[in-house]
Length: 128
Image (cartoon, rainbow, N blue to C red; front, side, top):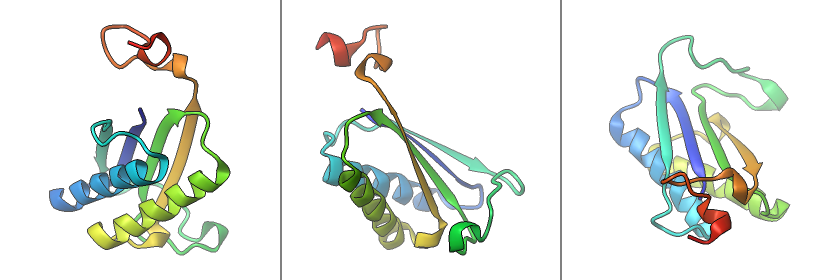
């Protein structure tokens, strides 16, 4: 049950934000095999000066960054993570017109006990 946070500039139209969200979700389904209905996303938009990034860090020329942070249960291989990054960037380019250089992705891993998806129950541990 990944939790996805997407941060982008506030001048992005709603259909572009939806395409970004859809592209990230599709990559999670296709690459790491989450169920189609396992979709939990937070989209935040930011005005001028509220997204701070180095435009040239590590030789990548960024213009209009979209940050994607995915919190998920630990256990995916390095290869799966790399494929997830590739697929997210490909989807966002094809569906939302986002340049690959402008997509910054971070994964935050934790354990099954670190999740409650309602009712104050640890469903991923208790098998509810």
